[in-house]
Amino acid sequence: MRDTRPALSDEELISALLAGDPEAGQLLYDRLIRVVEWTVYRVLGRGWLEHEDIVQNAFEQIVITLYHERFARSCSLSSWASAVTSRTALTELRRRRRLQKNLGSKVDIPEQGLPMLQPDVESQVLARHELERVRRALALIHPDHAHVMVLHELNGLELSEIASTLQLSVGAVQSRLWRGRRELRERMEHTEPL
Amino acid sequence: MTNENEPSPLARLRQVVVPALEPAQERARRENIVGRISALQRAGFPRVTPRPEPARSRWSFVALWQSLTNAVPRVFATGAGRTPRLVLGLSFACSVGLCAWFVVGLFEGERLEAGRVLVQSGRIEVQSSSTRALAGQELTLAADATLLATDDASLELPSHTDVVLQDGTQLRIAQTGSERTTSEHIALDRGRVALSVPKLAPTQALSVRTRDSVVEVHGTRFSVEVLNGPGGEALTRVEVTEGIVSVTCAGQRQLLTAGQSWSSDTSNDAKEPNAGGAPTVAAADSAVVAPSDTERVAPAVSAGNSDLTEQNRLFQSALDARKRGAVSSAVERLSTLMARYPRSELAHNARVEHFRVLAAAGRQQEARQSAQTYLRDYPKGFARAEAQRVVER
Image (cartoon, rainbow over all chains, first blue to last red; front, side, top):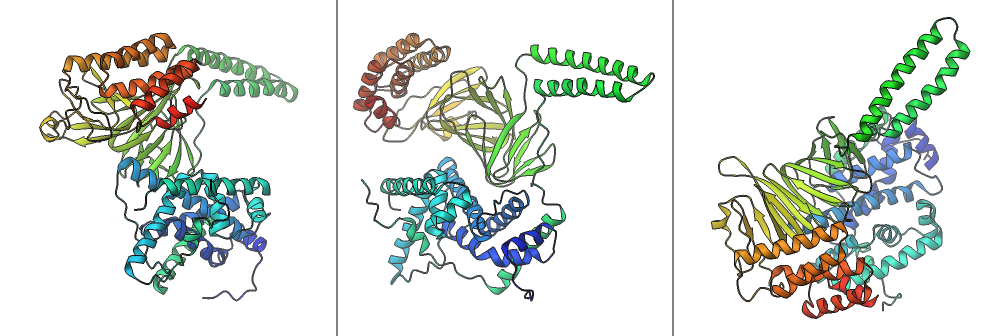
């Protein structure tokens, strides 16, 4: 059933949520599911069964941090959600890499419906492997740098928006982005194609 | 040098378009997540695991004493008759008891403190308190707390050691000693853990205990697994990925280097024959399996057990000397090992330890020479980056 009330501002939605309004959860879901889903999917792919768990976990983290006043309210709710989600997804990415490295588990991550309109199967496979290579390199770089890169380059947040979301200066965000790009390229050079 | 105008590799991930879920799946997920948000609202947005009480410390005694001394004047100011005296008497008795407890605590020596860990990923259950922790939460554990991984999970110990737990692994973690001389102990009851241990200070130690073995760490990556033997008894298996660990079983201590594995199962001798003629240290009830990694330098001749025992002894005594701060002694023993057994597996590790010890002692010129020798002898060695840094200093 669609909500017929006028659209609430971020501030009103948060207040309703924290006041226990039973409909606020649905509104929050509808407002944030796209950014949460896209962030998790792009960082991790959807080969793993726990994809749904990670999306749910991200929502739980968003709600709990809103309540515990860790949301500085100097950025939009969507930016905040993307910051929390990308942190969750990157942690998961690093966990998978550690599992692969330490336990030697062979993890096959099929990229279902890779929609890059590759002309043939071979190109699709190559593209899928290339994505996996980027993800492996992303798991290896400094977590703070990776976080800023995902927010800027995957979620399209402006530097100033990232700065207010993470409570950093714009210069610090630029620096992390620059270092992250350099580190990622270096890692990619040392990561053999699959 | 990288060209900053090139598109970032992450642009490839951005091209991925997220496929839509089936309407039924979408509905189910919406109900699930909205239901979870409602549950959090009803429960007052708790942090998923309540923070446990902090461990007993001397500071808690100080805080108690301060509150007591602040309270007594207030009682005198407001009370009348015999009540203030009674309160004062009780307070005195309590403070005497607390003093005794404090003094006993001071002289108790090394006792089992609560372990503190950070859950990095997955789900962990603390069985004694029936609490559950998710990624990003810190747990302060009572000494007898048993952790159960209900999913593949990972933890970070205060020494920044990463511990990866396979689903179903059960263990206990404890710390002993003061902040600077922390010893971390993992008691593995069942399952498998993989550890990535940063370089520990000489005063730090980390060990993994199973029912029949103790694995001590010297800065490395390795895994320990508890298996069921043919007769139902618990067996231990250790695999070393990088660095060195020592394993003590039935009073026998031995060193494992990168690529080696060890099992307390004697029947493994038949199942896992020694590969490539690499050195094997045979204990009465255990088996070491040498690496099959072709990059490693294999000895041209197989060494006898007595030689290997001597190599182990020299290497271990060098490590012990380094721990004690006896640099010259450590360097001398490592040099002896390399001179006597230049083709041994341990010579590689000895060369690494040699330049590390010298560099840590500030003997830069010697450290540089040793690192150069290492790079020449082991151009693909596991510590080549570290050696390169020493040379460039």
